[in-house]
Image (cartoon, rainbow, N blue to C red; front, top):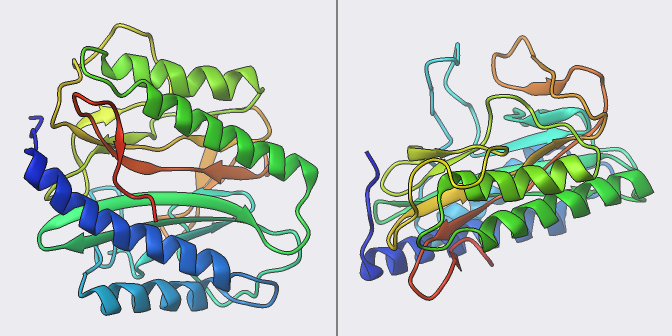
Length: 255
């Protein structure tokens, strides 16, 4: 069931979103060759503590997961698409890092993700990240009253497919509010004019995930969380929490 938010509640969600934006900016600033994903998670935890916020990721255990998620940030490196568990492997020059992060503040959740290169970036990685960000922008632009979920999905998928990238099957965005995952689901590919009608007060996490090799196939690591490209190619993930308003899309997780 879709939960519509009032203008005041969206303002409260914006406060949680600011924490997410600050944390992702801090993690990106701290990421360099030799730093570990676990150290980046500590940076994100520090931002939560400073803001008096908590993590909707830490301890989260959906039905598919064999164990609760053990960190506040998902840190996915190179061929990891999403849900990477931060570890102690130092980042190397040219690594491609995706960080997905959430914050809960005064009962409301914000959720966003960013992908960036560490050290000297590969040109192909820059193109991949630019396309993920362009797909996110297209999805956000479609998040207006009167459109449908399929219009967002079509906008995202068109950018991804036109660039020759794959889209992991079955993964996409979702509603956000008191819970991290609410109705409706927001696929990364679909037909325009289909699905739930967008109304003011809906808050959605729009999150393109791209596979550089062009296939849609992925595998799951033995940890039960980390999804990787089946062909070993690199992946990128971009996400914002966005409110549908009468004045147009409002990004809640910008720094």
